[in-house]
Image (cartoon, rainbow, N blue to C red; front, side, top):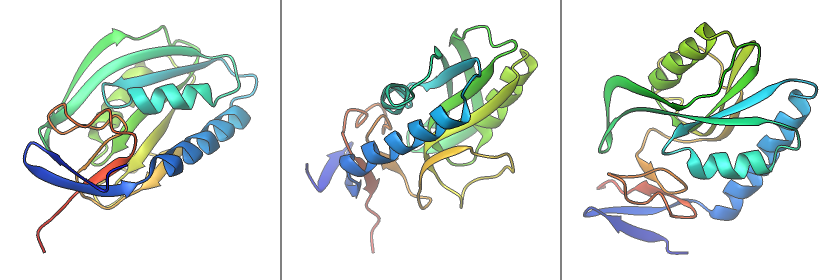
Length: 181
């Protein structure tokens, strides 16, 4: 695994190794398995970034579950646009179900705020959040994040599903942008 990569002319350094990520996801899956015994569980992944995390997470949950996806984004390049765009791609019927929204990263929290509201309005029993990464310095809301992989500083990251203008999603680890000293 390389310690330094270049995407679109920007250098990124290794931040979280793939083995650390996989161990943490297994731990989150065990916790969800424990918390959702005898519940009607639907896992909804937020596309595209959460795909890698979503695949590993659902394989570590030892319960029957239904799977869906939704497309939501507020990013253009490396910056948030401030506006959330939602497409209800493969959203299953959530009425009367317990839903976990799976996201790759939570920074401001606006995307998940909107998604929670929408899922709640569709009649879900409960809506919880699982995220691989969380930037507490950037978080602008007070709703709970139920399953957090790693808390990270407010710096741009790629890998393990996260991208920089669509590059870097396939990296097995997480890389942080290098900032000039």
